Length: 55
Image (tube, helix red, strand yellow):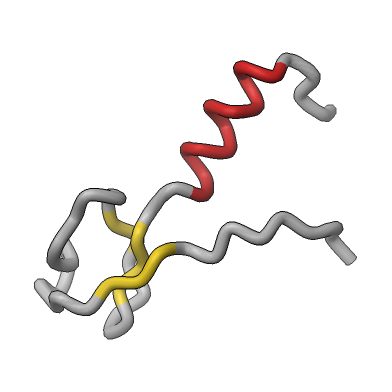
């Protein structure tokens, strides 16, 4: 069931897409993180935020 309320949609997308991913272990971290919470690796990347159609 798709979300039609724009405010709820924004909140859901922020929860799913706004994070950093560790290069070493692939762990999801907070957007403000400077090191991985799992392996303490300082090399983090932003999560890919391209929304596409599922195949």
